[in-house]
Image (cartoon, rainbow, N blue to C red; front, side):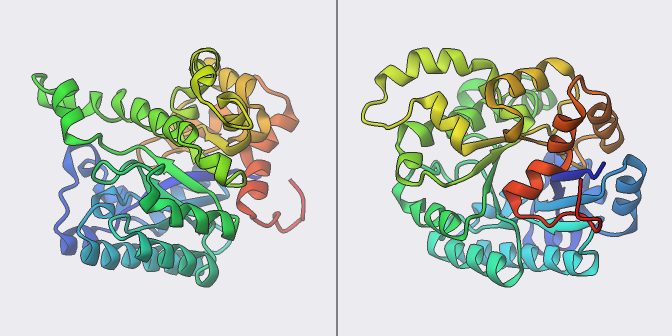
Length: 325
């Protein structure tokens, strides 16, 4: 069974140093793994049975820089990923990193990455200085993604400072850092971001826009019935309900989740066609993730769709050399 993992991060150490980036506690512990785009990464993939990674830069560190440096460093990250893809085209593909503080440049970079570098879409890390993806200033980026027929992977990122202060101040530093990010805050933030896009009518205007979120749907599958019952009646003028819109436009990945309850909830609420495999390398364990994929309580057909079939369809990836699953 072919296995394609689609939320697999990189961040080269020389770019970190040249851009003056502080990786912080969590990412800093994994600086070496983020830097590795060679034999070490391939060895981890081989040992876990992962045929392909779709690379994405952990680029929220440069996404919200001032426009000029953001354009420079996002382009450098994309060129670095492109070089890796060219070196190992059967093992790696990539999502573009975009300079969100300059929307016009972000449109140009998305177009360059998809049309020239053959990237599969883009990854955007949360809001940028309080600007969410429903804001009119970033609509040209979404328009271009829809025109190019590529997805945007919406990855969590730190909440705005006012939220950080209100919710996570006064706690031990390490615990607050985790609680505000991977321990809870990131997922609530990202789920809210998606719902903002629905409520604001983004998908009414762009019905073909594909958004991917990780971490088994950032809590949305579990809360979908409540969201539908409470939110849909007050969202006026839309052709579809909130749940109907999410089930049409949103795709989920398994990144960081390797247990039955979240997977079965995601499948029940969104259907197998909208669930894709990922690890969240290097923050997730590749071997543990593929072991769970192979043992999860789903049919072999559903397992193959999650492992590779949905990625091939949603991302436009070619079939393997045998032309089959």
